[in-house]
Amino acid sequence: MVNLIQRQTLTERQYRRANRVMCLILLVSYLVYIIVEVINARRDPGSDALLRSMVYGAAAAVSLGMCVVRPDKKATAVTMAVCYLAAYSLLIFGNGVVVLAMVFPVIIGFMIYLNSVLVGAGCLAMLVIGAIKCWQVRGDSVLFNYGIMIMAGYVVATVGAMSVIILLIRFSKEDRDVIEQAAAHRERVARTVAQIVSVLYNDFTGMVRDLETVNNAMRSADDAMNGIAGSSTDTADAVNNQAKMTSQIQRELEHTDRLAAEAGDTTGVLGSVVTEGRELADNLMQQSQLVDRDVTQISDVTKRLVNNVRRVTGITGAILDISSQTNLLALNASVEAARAGAAGRGFAVIAAQIRSMSTETEESTGEIEKILKELTSLTGETQKAVTGAAENIAAQRQQINAVNESFERIQQGMAALEKSIGIMGDNVKSVLVANGEIVDSISLLSAASEEVSAGTQQCRQTTGTAFENLGRFSKKVEGAFGQLQQLRETAGG
Image (cartoon, rainbow, N blue to C red; front, side, top):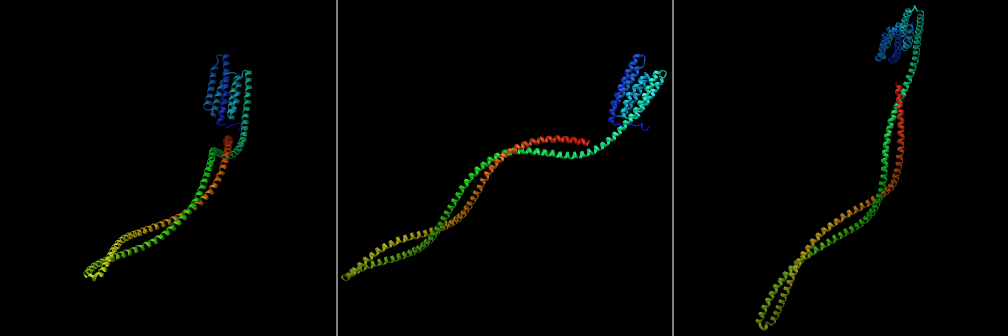
């Protein structure tokens, strides 16, 4: 008995589907019942078939309303079962025994709930209603026999329905166990798959990010290659221009080297000239010192000469005085000789000669005095000239000292200049060597720039091809990533 009371607990989704199917079966049954009542009403216009049809319609409306309002509840199934029992009872007691057979589709339909209690209670109610109907027609053996046969069908249908429900519940349990085992296995597999998918998802996510990075890098590389391609051409042109300018610089440096060599030679010559000038200045200084010494001696001699002239002038004055006195004495002697007469004639002659000599002496002395005056004047002028010459020679000696110092500074500057020119020559030679190396390097760089330009063009084409391949690969990865995400969602579900 316990085994006969079995039921399968349905989910709300299952109740929704079962209620809809059962509502459809009941609506068709109610329609058939209404048709039967319409046929009976035509045969017996005075019957209450219309009233029963209204009850069938009300039961159909209630069943449909419950399926609409509460489609996923067990109460909807119970309500539809109660409404059907009421409608079926009116059908049985308002019509013949044959309508008892119309319950079989409904019994089969209620088996969808897999509830032996619901189906068993319904079948028991049907048996009671059928038994009452058979008891009512027991006076008519034919109808009673039909009733008994239909009731036997009720019993067979009830037993079959209960057996089917029990087997279906068992099958459902067995299937549920299998399904639960399969579900558990699938859950374990799903977890494993979910872990693997999670790892793959993370890997694919990183791959997608890497592809995006690579894609961006490829774009940047493509842009850079475009820039490099342009700049390589510009670099090649610039290198060629630099090569021309460097060659020109090489020529200018060679010219500068020659000028530096000539400047070195000129500096050497100027150094020799400065050395000779310094030697001449030294000699001139020595000669100036000698002249200064001679001028000093001349000045001393001139001073002594002036003194001597002055002394001679004094002596000449004395001679003039003596000459005057002699002339006066000669005149007196002549006078005395004239007085003496013949005795004084010889003395007069001597006095005349003395007077003549005195006159000549006076004249000579006058000329000497005149000459001494001129000599004194010339000696004064000479002394002034000698003094001026001494002063000029002193100034000349100072200038010679200054010139000598200038020559010394020039000699030092020329030595420093010669040293600087030597260093400059060495630097120019070093620059020449370095510039030669630069010329060679620029030649190599020009060739390398041309190779880089050609390689850049080829690399640009390769980058474009790689960029296209990367785009196609990215699309494939995105497709795989979408499938992997769908698999992840499925595995997670």
